[in-house]
View 1 (tube, rainbow, N blue to C red):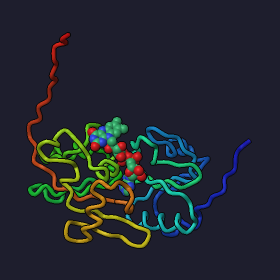
View 2 (view 1 turned 60 degrees about the horizontal axis):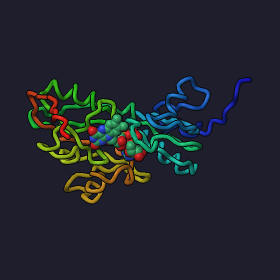
View 3 (view 1 turned 135 degrees about the horizontal axis):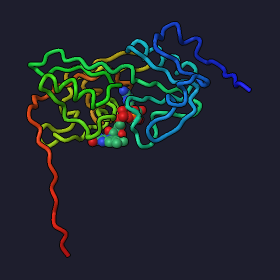
View 4 (view 1 turned 120 degrees about the vertical axis):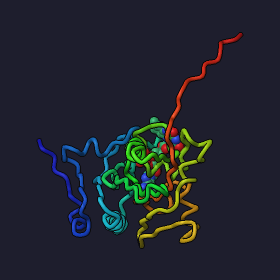
Length: 221
Ligand SMILES: Cc1cc2nc3c(=O)[nH]c(=O)nc-3n(C[C@H](O)[C@H](O)[C@H](O)COP(=O)(O)OP(=O)(O)OC[C@H]3O[C@@H](n4cnc5c(N)ncnc54)[C@H](O)[C@@H]3O)c2cc1C
């Protein structure tokens, strides 16, 4: 027998232009899982703009639903999904814009993956010190600090961060070192506790030749 589901999200669609994936949708099983967890949320919301994120957060708060936020879905504890709540999946917000290649200015949507970032920046002779795995999301890694191949030369991913766009339940903020500096400090390592980051402004580094190799030590008794 076909299951019927209550759609709790009819009221959301007025201000939210992204996709709403509900139980029963053929995409639901994939959309409700992360790399390490399976969940059964009431809905997976796929915002396309910061305005969509703001509408979703407001709606979820009004309804009192538990909320999980997901960029690349690689959190080991499975925080990118839940059961009985709502997931905001930022993977459609994955634009990678190089606005000034000479200065390394890059704006990256939180839902982008680091492998795609490397591909786009590589064409400009640029790179950001990020992680070692192409499928990890820009959102989660950056908010946690981000240790990557170039850490010794350029520091953590957050050491290349110049600003961000952050949506809270009340407002949209653009913290930098001089504007909302406390929030800027908090999102550089404080995880997803201070709002939903919709995009990051990085200062990428010029990188041309990349050398890789393996080092083996002899087995000694
Ligand atoms: C295979 C693998 C390799 C890894 N390699 C590295 C590495 O080389 N270097 C390194 O530093 N780390 C590495 N990590 C750890 C990785 O950086 C973290 O697990 C990171 O949180 C994953 O980010 P995500 O966006 O993919 O995950 P998600 O599960 O989407 O998010 C992780 C957490 O951040 C929150 N969050 C995500 N996006 C946002 C947002 N936009 N706004 C607010 N909160 C948000 C989520 O709610 C969740 O709590 C690796 C993990 C895996 C599984």
